[in-house]
Image (tube, rainbow, N blue to C red; front, side):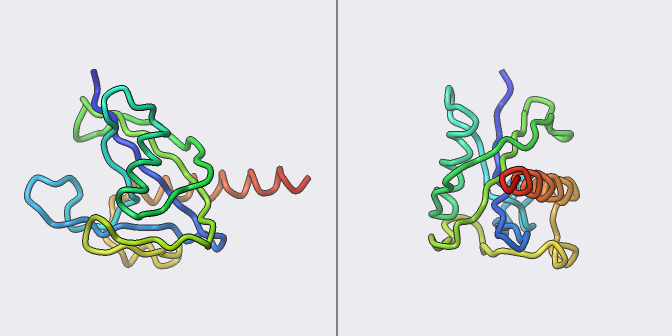
Length: 140
């Protein structure tokens, strides 16, 4: 059975995403770079529940609504399935860095100055497009 990893692209209204600066430890995947909050699902845990739990554990933030974004095989680890969700930041609850070196909202324009895996920028763009689509369909 494949290991299941989940992550959340948490978006502010201006399109900024919440990024976590990972610890730089030997053997830690993407150590020392910026990523979206996430981690491994527990055995039998639904993907969306795992994403909510990981987001809460790493940021102390409870997301109202999560939307499926993408599922894909990890190029570096064929025994791992990654599933990403996106959600909107409510602006009411603070976020706190509970894991890693730092946690902050970064605008899409600032993304190039943050070392991060390239595929996460693609997922960020997908989340922005999905958020715009749901916003425009709810205003019709």
